[in-house]
Length: 418
Figure 1 (cartoon, helix red, strand yellow):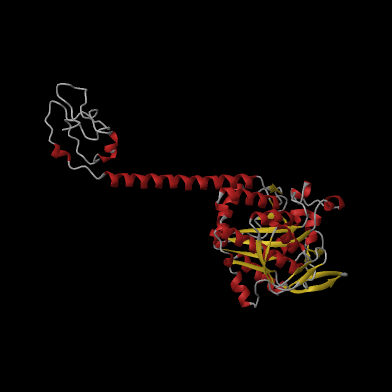
Figure 2 (cartoon, one colour):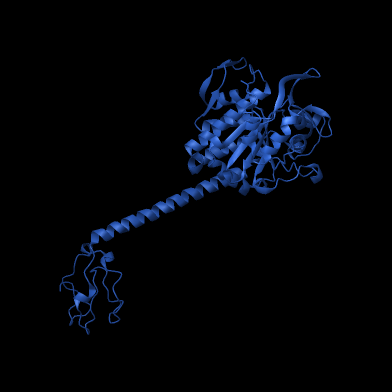
């Protein structure tokens, strides 16, 4: 046999085959262990077992060789699959690390809950709602990407007076955001900034003055007293910072319901869909000229913009790509500040839940009100509907808001306003 050993000349080969003619994988891995072959007596270059000189060898016992092409093809498939798994795992790890880094660098507002007595707060929700999360989100227009508050106000103290108040920008929007556990849905409900409400320790006033007088702590106390909803976390949106986020997403599409004119920017908003860049988006969410319902209409615009942001994130899948995720998250964390009780791990978990949430399962609405154009003490205010409001906020906290709104003739953004 060509390529076999000559008994009298151990260690010398004769008529050796080209190693490329046979593949080492052509050996059948299922061959039985004879026990009479030396394990070191196999030549990978030849591709067949060499018989020990002292023992006769019957080639029929080895069985036929398998076709080399089939074996090579299987190897290529396995190697390619392994490489794909490594790439996917590496991408997921990179996206996770990028997200963790950016979220870890988000501006913090201290702990605004620390000075609120437990007895003064609403009870924790029970049942399935106990696993939900509710955020109180305040929007400000500072026209700068920096943190919207600092010092004692940012740490949540209820310090008041002209010095502390002058350091805080006025809140131009207020939203309660309820995230149902497991990404099953979400509610985003605006409370008009000029709603006339009782403010603990300060009599009555527009709800935005609670933030001006006492920072995040007094704002949380006021909203919890008004709604009976337990707030888990507090966040501030700096609308100016969303300019970079809009550009990072490649623009955001909004639906304008009615023609309005902004004299400051000389922009005419016409009915229909508009794909906005960062500058246009900032103009859209801060312009209240021509809106018959004042802050109510402005907050509906801001909700429409947030809906567009979530939809764009879902359509593009940018958070799943570590290259684009870095740009998006950096812009997002520059525009949003959160309280220090919200850990980075919790934010990652929430981000994962929201990323898979279809915008059709998000209910956007406004706190029930009687009129948006009331006048109190020569000041234009919004009078909330306290009768309907009690059931509304209970349904909000216990995951039954759509059914309540239907039963009471309320629709998203109701009462409707341009």
